[in-house]
Image (cartoon, rainbow, N blue to C red; front, side, top):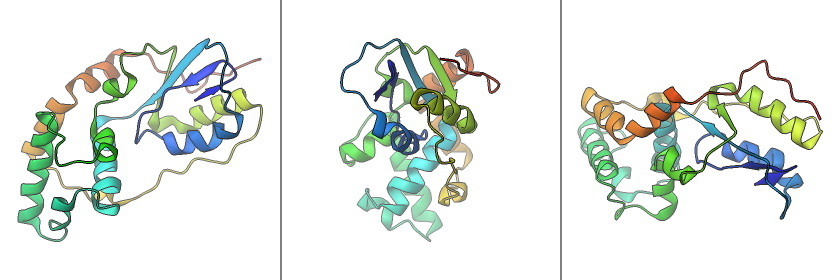
Amino acid sequence: MLVNNSKFYMIPKTGLTRVRGWLGPYHQEKSRVQTRWCILRNPYSRFCSAYSNIILKQGCAEWMKESIGNTDIYQNNMYKLLDDLLNKNYNDMTPFTSIHFTTQLEALKGGKMNLYFKFEEMDTVKRYCEFLTNTQLSPFRINKSQSSDILLNTEHAAMLKEIYKDDFEFINRVTFVDRSTIWHK
């Protein structure tokens, strides 16, 4: 999405829908890109959000539906999902489902950004979008969905750490936009 020479790189489950809503009316088809930016999110919370929204709420993976309310089946199916992700086996997933579980670095396709924002600091993202559009935008509210109810045992957490290893390393290396940053025209 391109607004005022600033290109937003879209990564699912990082506030993408809200930012698209904020910037959509101002999108330009062609413009010289001067700034590339994205929002990064803690891989654990991003996974839980995707799992809650894509698997539980939208039921995009039929084999996961049977696990709701049954702890044994839930643990086995969670293991199957994580094992598929670890081995990059997306055969049981639709393209819509798999894109939500790919790493953030894969979503960026190696693109180098000028600005990195933290999902946990969406107020800073909102201020930047207001700067780009020169308008007052609606507030961002994090949906308190079922993602906080996702149970990850020690084995699941270890698998997630391996699946998103590059994301964890990248997030620890990158310099994020400071909350106190003020943009000027």
